[in-house]
Length: 472
Image (cartoon, rainbow, N blue to C red; front, side):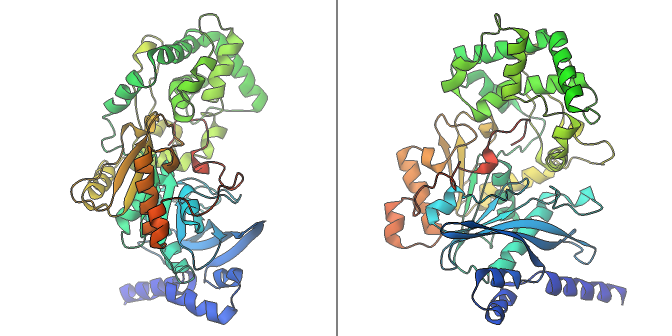
């Protein structure tokens, strides 16, 4: 009897708070044709704000989700999503960042290519989309994929044409995990610069990357500046301490100012290649003749002294939790810092408050990697040739169909389809258009269907903009 009652309660939650495609279709006829009315007729959906943008309607919304998709009766939370609406007769792109949600209208590269609608989702446990109280054991890639599946199910009745998923960096990882758990939802996947850390404690690929990226002159210049910052640890830490006191910054989570200082310095070379490149290497000052102020300011520009303060880490606790439980995180050797580094690359666990329990699950990434190799269907992975996060990419094997892994030469963490060599660019654009179900002539032309908009298309993906801290 008790078991039957639980399933009845589960059914009530499913019906009462999360619409199916059929319910959305019924809501359309009941509320009229205005897109806002149709969206808000979905049970569990509420409007936060609507922002005008020429040629679109842009809505920021809350959507009720179960805390635990295994037990949907055991509590809910509100998850923010955004809808960039163009036309229900256009394809729809489901964009994920893997982090928080931007409430400014913007358009991913696939959305511009197919001239479509765009749905964006805030990743669970990033504020304000965090259950209260927060049961951190409910933050995993399957729960997040299930969030995405239910949003898709709710909106599919309104946006009935083809759907693609996309995202950059952790957003590309998110799109990939969603495909692994719900392979029948999307008609195609475009994952940008998505790391694939299959074996967490085997990171030699990163060491090879940093030994060979760019020119030796550039590598030596960067390494010298990084080393100099540790040589001058004492005077630079005095500056750091003064800055922290002025900003009321604290270091409880990482453990000490000294640990935070070294973590920032060790991120310097990685941060340079992630977001910049060889073309600006000559802007790095000569370490031997630079003043303390110059060394301090240079490290800050590429790594950010705020990154490992309690205040800087707080926003990203969900990421570091996932890195320490499922995703893994890189460790590199940096032999040029021998004798100067006290801690080395610190594990993700060091960046999560100690009161949050966690245990690493090494099988999770192995499962995703093997699934992609054997089952990828209509998946495109785009990497940057000079991006450290591409050192451990996804691969497609013999079991994959209509799937591709491309590398944009010389590109960093902002790699795009537009930056691929011409033949790969044409094929990638054509496949995206074909997966989106556009007419054959457009597929053959292999050109984006929407014009570039400097405000809407500020970057390939705003989720790959420059931020400090070692995060994808």
